[in-house]
Image (tube, rainbow, N blue to C red):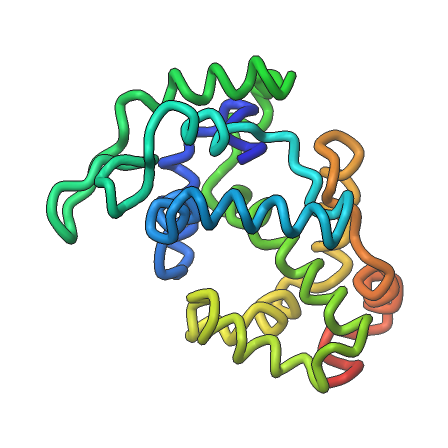
Length: 213
């Protein structure tokens, strides 16, 4: 949402995430589950996890005020025609502009130049960070449990091995540096202590899966 209000095309985001191998992009997913569910989850996450989910975007709320939007009503981020046909909603630009004026966010021309690969990183590195929080809190027994959960539960591409396995192919140092950079400008991207420690130790080759693997 933050990327969109800063000027990134939401349809490019969906295309980039789908091309990465996810079942569908985040905006198609929000249409699929319904805006009521998406907004309720956002409120609950903000309540339970504080600033980690304190997103400034108002886009969903702006759209909810104007339309009863989701895939079941055939109108949301996309316009739906039948079960498999959907096209971009021509009113999206109007909603984005209104949401931007409410949230106080502004066009960021650097973000608008992001490649598809960089978009995927900005979408999924926070997911990696949350996965590291789960490892840090010992909610799962081993890192590979999160790989299985990400494939079966969130549609992460199986051929990429799962969220932690994929993160290890990039390295905790790289992911942590990106999150640190974004947190200085865009807010809730700060890497958790578990990830930061792995990034520091990765100089000697330690990966995310080396603890609780």
